[in-house]
Image (cartoon, rainbow, N blue to C red):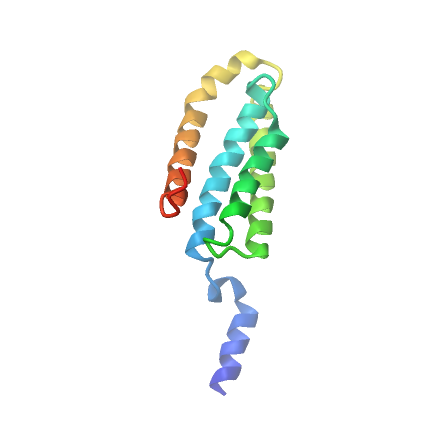
Length: 133
């Protein structure tokens, strides 16, 4: 009877029953900050290679995948999060007119510099245990 109730609980509330791993959360923060900075850079930085930036991020994640016990579904979720945040940030910046009036980029630079700083802190946090710096 008890096992049946536990299984029923997991079927009804899968998000509450299975928490995301600490390592996934660590990478999730990195992906969020990186995606926002990449979206800003894609609009405001001349000759920014968005595809290369995304490739570099996920190549790093794949290299660290084993050390941090990330599974394929974690990587797919991170990639999905990257694309959703990037699309959302790009849309917001476009609505603000940054894509047509590049002089507005300076107005938002401090915000994205803050995201970049947090991204670098998260990267340092991820790389420190592996002594890969």
